[in-house]
Image (cartoon, rainbow, N blue to C red):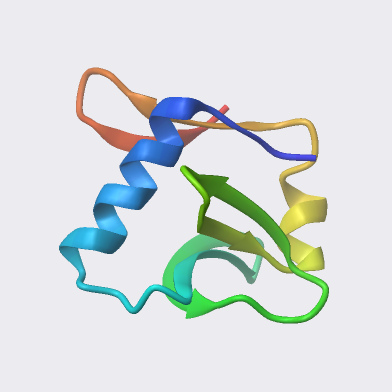
Length: 85
């Protein structure tokens, strides 16, 4: 399973607030042609979810969850961007 740090959860929450995303939306990490991308989307059946203060901030479908198993999503302190390590 992907480990999402507290800093990454705050970052995702802030991102959703800045995008004025509806409360039922979260950031979805997608795997397309072997590369990761992200979009604001709604939770779907079978998704893995990650929350911050009771709000879902990240959703992964099974392909993304498999690609990110035993990885960590964090915030790079040098440039304040999300990184997968």
